[in-house]
Image 1 (cartoon, rainbow, N blue to C red):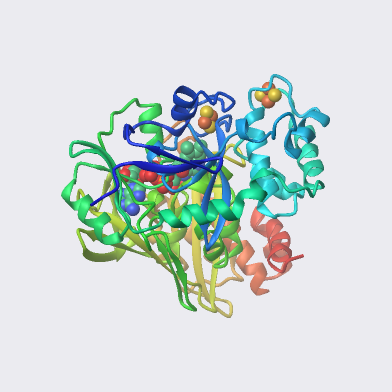
Image 2: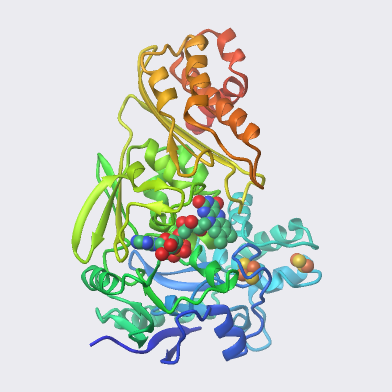
Length: 503
Ligand SMILES: Cc1cc2nc3c(=O)[nH]c(=O)nc-3n(C[C@H](O)[C@H](O)[C@H](O)COP(=O)(O)OP(=O)(O)OC[C@H]3O[C@@H](n4cnc5c(N)ncnc54)[C@H](O)[C@@H]3O)c2cc1C
Ligand code: FES
Ligand code: FES
């Protein structure tokens, strides 16, 4: 028998709800039902951070609070979590150390962004991380302030970090964790009726069976795409099946040869394992959305949505990743590149789940490069995503796998360029130029609001040049003159080599 009530914690207080519409957002619940109006609605699409709240979930045995965009989280997703909003921070008349620092450092003018900024800094305060500029920038990447400017806000974050007091959350953390653990009793969640429901099965078996039984249902992972169908396209999604509670579905497992990412794993959960493959993957991951988007959005969702401009598929295809799918318990696997058939068309049956992504590690002779090109550094969708795995032997390229996003209707390999690179010399730029020219046979991009076709064509060629320049420099192949000719590649290579060496 499935549980028919949502159970979550509001600032540590157990809350039960049975009247939950599958499309209700967490922000609407907070503002319209609870009247917790400190949390603001700005863009209603995950971009501005005004709606940021802290969501506590048990991660790796520890109750951890992450910032999320309440505007695009569906209420059903918070089952089993503890929600803290800006209205909960002060203890009586005493402000939280983050709030005090924001006042003292003049971190607010019009104040519209301030509740969201306070909540992002609150999660940083609790993260145990050293609040240096990198950490602060990372935590503020999803919070747009249009009038104060970020320096006083960053100063406030640093000032708050120097306060070592225990806040109300610290005092109740162990108790809340115990309460949440009591909820994890393997019960499926099913709120609503057979034709309008929010369901969150507790096991992979019941998740797969329910999805197969309702092939017309929307599969929901982090809701960083689906949430916008509700808030921006005003679509009605009568049946929602959430993958986030199924035990094992979000596991990330690693061994010496591969990484297996459960499709429900968020970017934050998969971060360490993926970043360990190569520093470029780490750099790209840090530029996917914002801290809020990465705390909810999943690698599985980035693949299942079939977007030609998702950041993960090009990197995963270059790494020769494969995909596991589960249809009512029937499992099949395929190379990830074969999943993307055409624009908006993937090799997935209705009711079938993307269940795992299997990513081989780089071998000794493999070199990897990935570059994201977008107009803004943070919180922006790629115009082009380039990734390449190049296998070298001495001065020779043995083979290459190159995949790009934003260059075709699907994430697509550059097979002509790859063929031209097989046997090419790292020390001879004329060999590289043949591969660079071959990109014209691989891609015929379109112009859209993110970039023109000409820009895309030119930049993707420069990115291959940059990758080869960096790899050649790392291998010590080619003379200085050649490296200098390799434009950005050669210039970037020194810094890149130093970065990779940890300098
Ligand atoms: C502000 C903002 C910034 C963003 N920035 C980036 C960015 O920089 N780079 C980028 O690539 N993307 C970006 N995105 C898009 C989005 O965050 C990603 O595509 C994310 O990975 C989607 O994952 P999700 O778990 O939120 O998916 P959902 O929204 O839950 O689902 C997405 C799609 O996949 C399907 N689905 C999800 N899981 C499964 C499954 N296991 N099996 C079958 N189908 C499934 C859903 O039905 C839906 O069609 C951004 C989004 C926002 C709102
Ligand atoms: S209201 Fe802008 S991110 Fe939610
Ligand atoms: S204080 Fe006005 S938007 Fe930040």
